[in-house]
Image (cartoon, rainbow, N blue to C red; front, side, top):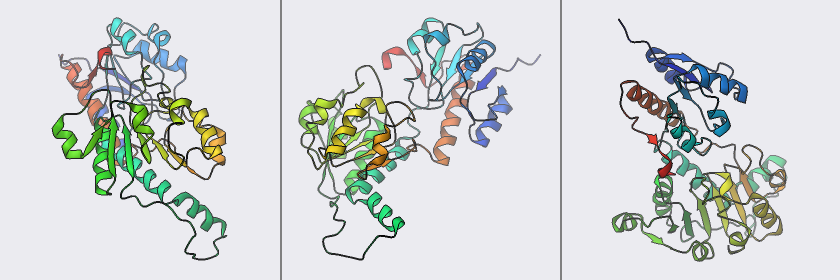
Length: 328
């Protein structure tokens, strides 16, 4: 007798190739509308599924986990970040959690570098000038930006993405500095030609560009608070492609408006998709709709990792990308 297939509920639309492969392997329930599930819909899914495949748009907290059915044994997150999942409570209830690390490092680093170039060379202002039809012709002193080569880049969070940003910065001739929870091995520092700063305060006060690549955890919430933002040079720019909660967005907005920070490139926001509306009024910002990992290749690779995690679990083994509270 054939073994009963796992019941898998996917909360958002995934690439067609990924959904087809899942359907071949499991009893899959897809979200045809691609609208985020309500809490009631999530609770219902967690009662009837063996495996839930959520995304960062789904908040799987303690209250929701308390409503999970006896069948639910794996939350196979589609994405690397798991700050939207109460991993500790899931573990207490015997529910494993997995993620998709390492897939989007290069894609996100590309986006961080694109924003560094955009802000340093004032591309958003140039685009708006041309779109408005108000350009009056070339001038030796018009639209002067900063040369990328020689700028000091500070990287906050030197994991896979931070290191990918450092490699790109090296190619542009930038001087790489970093602050991390743990110092990198000497060989990696040498490869990246990166200088370690134990003091984040000292690093941010010296760099021309600050790239945020740290996950959202209790220890990184508002790590770039008003006090620390004020340490930055007035001609410095800040880039965030990680999690919005790492920056005090209201403080950043005030300082951008006052000219105390030269610019900001944000792909993430403190309140999800609800970026501070005052940011949209500013010319010295690049605001993106969480596009850092948005490549066809990356999304398919993420789906493949989800499938491997589920299949490995179904075969009675620990998912290769299992997340445990001690890792956070």
